Length: 371
Image 1 (cartoon, rainbow, N blue to C red):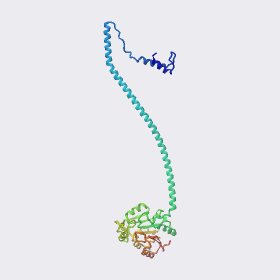
Image 2 (image 1 turned 120 degrees about the vertical axis):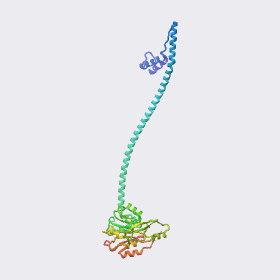
Image 3 (image 1 turned 90 degrees about the vertical axis):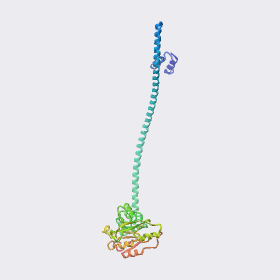
Image 4 (image 1 turned 180 degrees about the vertical axis):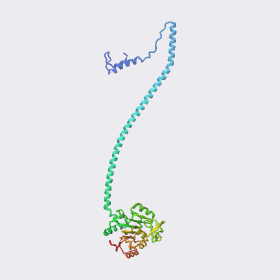
């Protein structure tokens, strides 16, 4: 037993002393013995020869063996190199496969974790959506309660005209949601409107304005009302020029009035002139209020209020309340002025001024049964 075998046997026997009675791993010892036997190439054989003929034969055999070795050795070396390269390639390929397999397993684990997180996030989103829907329901309910509480409290008019009208309705016994109105020179749908407060409660009426831009806004914002892009005139089925001013609420059919606005405020200008179809007060009343006059007649047509009032057939149509602009345009606050001609005319047809807001007068019908 050589030294190497002794060391290996010692390892195989868990460092026990090597003795004849030592217990070893027999299969592994047999394999070790086989490795030891095949360490040396046993294919080399001695060629004995004593005679001349035998020496010649031995020489020939040695020559053949040398020639065979000369031919076979390069093939064996090439095969060995190929096998070594193949082993290295296979080892590297296996290493890459193992690395990719490990990466795929890691990615699968990460994907599973992401799927679980996504499912958790979806559940959280659904919970948030439900909470948001519940919150929206509560907010809507609160908004409805607030709207109901403030329905009659907010004024949209320039100087509180709709609040005064609301008081008159309470005296007349008219429910704001049931009133009807005719708004001449309606201007904006909400801003500075004397009728919008009642529209939002359910009231409906007719809005007339000669400015095509404003009538488009009125139609979009107040679809429940009838909106007409017309000029008020005493001549039916015609067209009149309408002067659109750069200042809000100043556009007019009266060119003199437009020029007066510019003299008062040089920053103003006539932006453009459009031709607008005309309609008479009589046509409006006969078409839309044949059964009953409107509860509110609002007139704001920049300098033509008295002209329009004189066109009214008060013998047939008597609104409960008439709102009329009573001052001329000023670039500063107007105090202590009022159109006396309109006051006198209204008294002559049986209407009395109930309130003056500094801009508009609110007239009530003295002859009306509910007045």
